Image 1 (cartoon, rainbow, N blue to C red):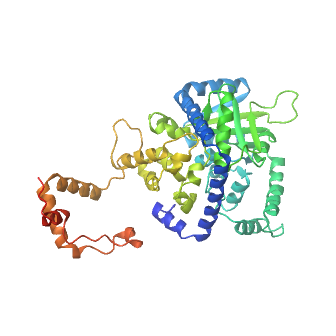
Image 2 (cartoon, rainbow, N blue to C red):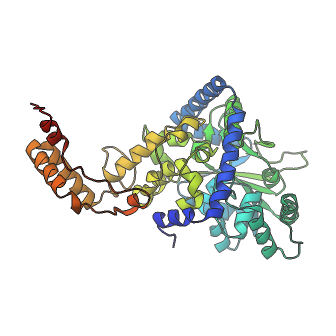
Image 3 (tube, rainbow, N blue to C red):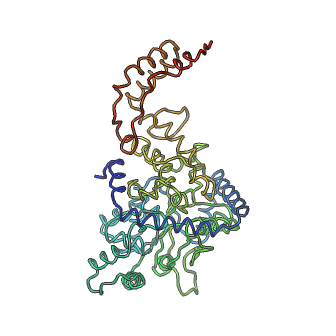
Length: 470
């Protein structure tokens, strides 16, 4: 059973090693992003264009998805629709079983994490092997990613070396990063050589041409999508865009915002299976389009902006809360500010509404989002809906976080402030009995002094100076 959120937060704050590793990486990514966008005017223009491209796609989402399906099928890509994660898992399982695959090699895919695909396939007797280096390291310890771009940022090289030594004792122990990478490559090559099927995520799906765009730095994504006989791509329905010429600005925003790179090492454009006369590529390409609550989010005029996200992770990198906790404290697939907005909508405020509270509302996430998602406003919206329903809203779990004690307190507060005589009487009584004020007020006074009531109220001080108000 996953511990409650406050417990996970306490555990994260108490792990100095993890906090140090995450802080070092976050500082580096923030600096790289700053250097990648030296011209503020250019960045503003790019962000505005990115927002418009993604906004246009969401405004025409049903039509674009149908266009994507038609053009993918014309190119020879088989398209499957999954309303839920369970349906998506079953579709992937059926494709693998038809080909007799007991092994699937995986490129990085947050949607497959959302589906819980690895554990599902394992229960079905099919082994899923992560080939992204960070994901591979975490899979050895049965861990979730801590970050959507750099999944193993909470690990240092000593921890990774010890994990490799425990799982691969046939290789000599090393803490050298290049040496550890070489070991991982040798192990993965064996899987690349015998896997019948490969699975990947999708960064953008172009409706106009039926093209699946996948960006990566390690080359494992290209191997997963070309070496096996079958390629399965899993994709959230919101990843569709209208035209191919909209890709360059989005790729510029994605790579510079994520890692500070002008462009990733590999940009894969997949438009179909191997054709006659071609020497490589899969014989079959399947695209699984996952809804899993996205249509419900899309139906809300304000919250639909959540779906503009291009999964760059910039909001996490700049978030003072995430940078101190790391991703595991959230207990969800998507952590940080975007997780605090997306996950409660996907799973309900009654289950994950507290994630919206894991924010100082400093506004940094909204300032750096490359597609201008108003994350602070969305966090405030979800906080409000957690304690008070909103007519016409489709967010699951509205009002579930409203506690009877809180309701009583605010009702009393309203009454006191509605009647001046009652207000004056209670404040006067409070000043006389100020010595009863407790010295410890829960977490607030762990690092602060308890507030002290003044001996005399403001009204009394004013009257003593001769002021007589109306």
